Amino acid sequence: MILVLASNSPRRKHLVGLTGWNFRVKPADVDEEFYPEEAPPDYVLRLAESKARAVGAQVDGDAVVLAADTTVVDGNKILGKPVDDGDAERMLRRLRGRTHQVYTALAVYRVEDGRILTDLCLTDVPMRDYSDNEMMAYIGSGDPLDKAGAYAIQHRGFHPAEKLVGCYANVIGLPLCHLTRTLEKLGIGSKTDIPMMCQNDLDYRCSIYDRILRAQL
Image (cartoon, rainbow, N blue to C red; front, top):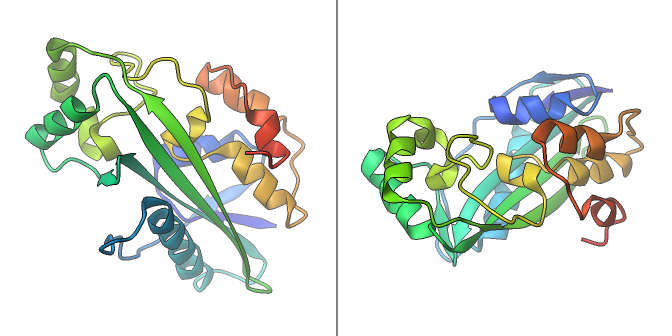
């Protein structure tokens, strides 16, 4: 198998690197416009599948393409990447002290027979009541500007979320246990203990990985 990651995200490349699968990167170029009245889960599933099919049309027949799309949602409002510091401040003020959702859709496309499998992960993210000074210092670092929702959950200086119960890797951009169970449906297993590799790397104790792998979540 040749696994092709349809993303140039450093975070996704790092997470796939924990799995033990050999992979190469071929970023997808698709229109990411949000359709009116489109629900956030439908949006990320549509984009993930579009990315997988777009890259699948450009690679060899023995490839399996992995595509993902992640979005931050507050209510029914999708929060993309901030356009500037002011936009980042508005997003972080909106999210402060409240719980929002992060959706990631996966699409795995086997080129040889055109089979495509999708999966969806949802994580509730409780943001802490960070101070204005903390928020402005984080914005000043420049880190929010390439992050959906204007934050990186793994940022050790800002650490914006607290008491998270759910898939931490999902919020970063690639739910590895969902990926594991999806690839297993194609007969693609791993010799690596992916849940443990994920938790050790992210320094996070996950209470739900076994239920995800058993398709109970």
